[in-house]
Image (cartoon, rainbow, N blue to C red; front, side, top):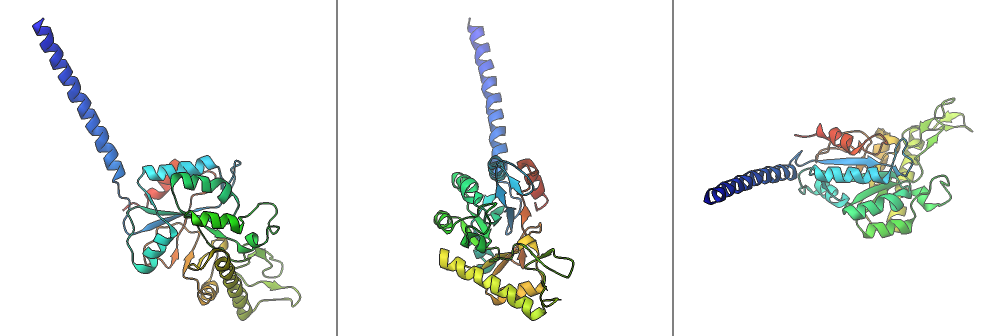
Length: 291
């Protein structure tokens, strides 16, 4: 009987040892994951557009959007606000390792009805670059509703931010004769009545007036704030940059892939909102920026 007790004690001791070893390995793995540093003193900015049940093009589902956020958290990416991003870029303030910020373009109402609840649940701050005209005139874009100022005010009080995607230059205007497919912001337009293109002075004035008007209205509706600009279609040129700077724009956002440091003149944004980008594929896409 005494021998059986000794054998049992030995077996229990061995079991406890192996369980402790397995537990240690699990804790070690979780700790390594939670402490993983992909990059320092840099920030990745993600780009989304629209959220809906029917995924297509740059429209993704709520489930996919939330899966992106949770996968990023699991990989130890740290979500920051636009205020923190601006402090990093303009005031030399530090950022946590693996800093990341979410942006949306166009100001669709789905940001309020579908993205915002998830952002609140996950405690994440995002930015929406709005086409101001579409929110200023509810009838302007009847096919796809845009955010109202009241919705934006509510969300702004809860950590979300809103900046310019131009007043009304997110569309096409006539370009050269017989080629009416030019981006309104980034190209001179064809003046049909005069049978000519805008001259450089006319073009720059149009662009500057549009950008300035967008910021005036945003400040009137949402309060004074920094002047930022995301280029429609990601398209711009030197005239656009100069006109925007004269209109007081402090920071620009493109639609090109990349990671940003303090010296990035026009911020890169990685497209995460395509319907065929799963959470796993998004993480894989970001791995190339690991140091």
